[in-house]
Image 1 (tube, rainbow, N blue to C red):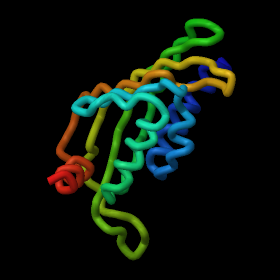
Image 2: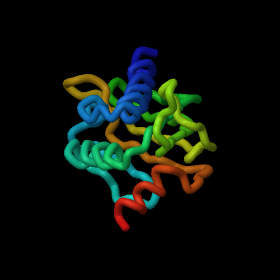
Image 3: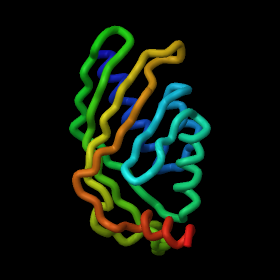
Image 4: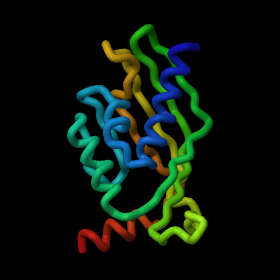
Length: 150
């Protein structure tokens, strides 16, 4: 149960760090050779590439929230585990109103994260995270990325 808790905690820290643009906390979720696989993007491997991916996303000027749920961790041994959690993302490129909130739109992605965890000298870390989208719409992140590259 402790391993399950520590791996689920990593899943939550990842989401909060991504939403806050906290590159150090985001990178710390991964092993030094860890990787993130996202459909339509090259793999992000290693701390430098993982950190750069969050920095690039933050540069788009989009506020976003990752909501994760239905987290199930399977412990394979004292040093390895795998997991899945469902993902729902919301994002907005709109400026905040007087109360600090932004208009809400439909979710950008509904999907699953498939994770491989390992115990390191620094504790549990994600070795591999793969996003499998179930539903996807052309959202503010995609639009901002196109505008920036075009």
